[in-house]
Image 1 (cartoon, helix red, strand yellow):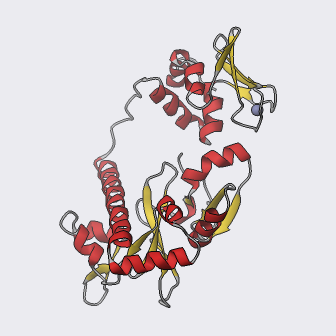
Image 2 (tube, helix red, strand yellow):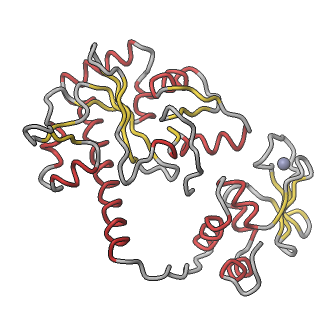
Image 3 (cartoon, rainbow, N blue to C red):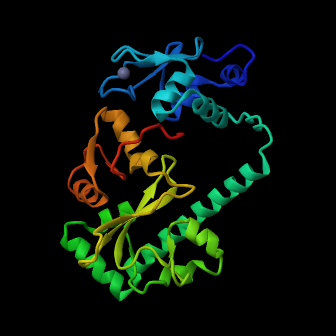
Length: 296
Ligand code: ZN
């Protein structure tokens, strides 16, 4: 797959498959090869081998095999270009800079990283509200009542958006301008008065992460009878409902091991399921399954 003379070929020549595989699988030297438990199927005795001489891996149990890129693509569930990047990074090989971006592209990238940072801060804020305010504690008690214990709440990063209407806005405002706040989808603008207010109010919040584990949106469930019962972040420069699967970043690992998944509709359902079972799980954060694969 790696063309002669290409960057991918160069990386492959410099990369040591044993080192790369060794980051995922505990390998033992057996003769001139290495062996370990196959990460692609369940087994108790090792049938997975890596050859440093041939720079390939092969499993006698499930028949999976190939070069370092095949391995990373299967492990990370990603495409070839991403696998090249992963291997290069693991081996400390500098990735050639992409051709100079246009000023617009640079601006967009910058905006995306600011929005990701804003979501990270918002997550901290929501969690603090749940843990440290009377209103939040009442929400926490309600969650526990519904079968979610403290570990599950912490594990899911569940938080609370207070009822005030501008608590988050006041928290973020010193650092971010109005346009960014509205672009993030965390803050809305009152169409007639132009006033800004929190999108999520008096709601239990669930962070939604992209595949690399960065929080890019929130799902929120009303605490009382407020409508709608469930509410998500709108589409934003960092969040596209059709390409983000809730908890895929964490389910990837189990999914690969078990080779099956249970798809549950709704953050709430998923959290409750997860609190009860340790099966492979994830949840669709959108009414539709992704129509395209997001970049790993
Ligand atoms: Zn195998």
